[in-house]
Length: 222
Image 1 (cartoon, helix red, strand yellow):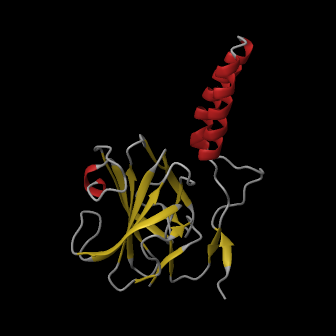
Image 2 (cartoon, one colour):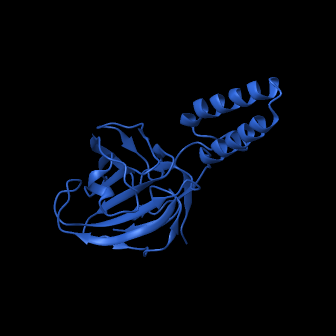
Image 3 (cartoon, rainbow, N blue to C red):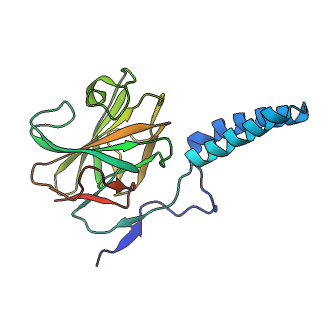
């Protein structure tokens, strides 16, 4: 039976919101209040709807994390769009396996560590903004690549990739930091993709089309 734990302290609010969303929520709510004071009814309604969607987009629910030390969890909510073997990649040394998760604007966009360990590298690459579900997005889009070393000495690469609408990649860790499995490490604003690179001996537990949740869904095991 799989046991679970908290990677981060549970939120003390009924509807937790990611901190990067505060500025967007405040700006939208402020504009809505101005429209209401000016008695512009239709703009007030539109502003209220936009504010509600922004709150919904930046939601940050607590997650129970599988406690099995051999599991690799999804770093993102969304749909698995690719599972494949890769002979070489700039994000991982040698041959590996890749699992790609596409996040639509309706998914939770907070990213979580796929495994526990120490961050060895963090590299940000400016780039283009093709739709994140395209193959060329992995190389050509703006992205942020992290390489994690587990306590067992295994490495996991995971890459935050901006999409067609996404214009901001947020990463709150740097080289030398340690993470727990399922711990929050960043987010991407407004639609994007996460690629996970694993050793060739990792046993993949998902297939293309599966829906996954960050921190909760097991995508592979050592």
